[in-house]
Length: 269
Ligand SMILES: Nc1ncnc2c1ncn2[C@@H]1O[C@H](COP(=O)(O)OP(=O)(O)O)[C@@H](O)[C@H]1O
Ligand SMILES: Cc1ncc(COP(=O)(O)O)c(N)n1
Image: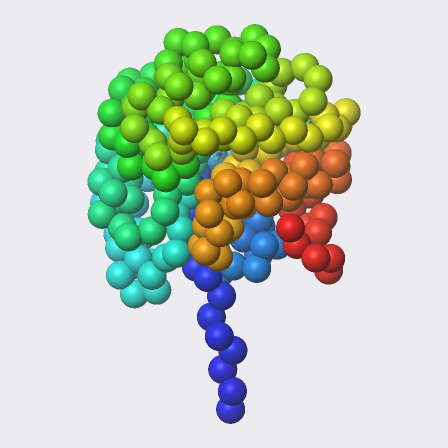
């Protein structure tokens, strides 16, 4: 009997989106599409659909710690991605867990949903700044999160560099500022303070963009788990999320999800 070699293992530490477009569900679908073994530590459960978030319940810190230890101590991880962490207590526990793990960490500092529903308590922002961001190999804030964390308001592409410098002050190794909410091309800036990479993709005129940020951060984690450098992983992840946005589809009466499976059966980037 033959056994196949195990694929790289990637762990998401995030909230559940019952609608299946964002959160842990987006992360695991991305991981399957990009050829790694996806695993999850659930931090919170949301009742969520195309119209918004109808309810959110966080898990006890012991439940988060126990899930994390179960996965890391037996199966092992080649990369970790964090998403919705809900409270200061959970942010601090997760920051400690990822700091003690010998694997790159992609930190998506999720603040609010596309519909403006809060996914992180305001009282947790300081823990994100002082404990979570310093533990990140790559942090991937969107423009609202940049404003919340640093006070820098990005209004045009020219402001991206100033935003990146302000986030780097908190200590992540790299930062990817996502300019997806600006008009014009979808432009993101990746930098470690020395090297700078501008990632530009055509804007798809598609309102079905639920889950873009989760999908991009997970795709970066997949690339890192496969041994790619941060810039290589981010370039490939940007290609993957751009294709997923182009293929986003209507579901329910509101904002539909990106299509995580758009590249299945084709060569993955
Ligand atoms: N309409 C769009 N067309 C193409 N790319 C987009 C579009 N909207 C967002 N993006 C890209 O999707 C990724 C996620 O960005 P964003 O939507 O800003 O994150 P978040 O989901 O955290 O708000 C970024 O690479 C961004 O440039
Ligand atoms: C549980 C959960 N986590 C994260 C997001 C952010 O989603 P997006 O990727 O659209 O910003 C969400 N809506 N729900």
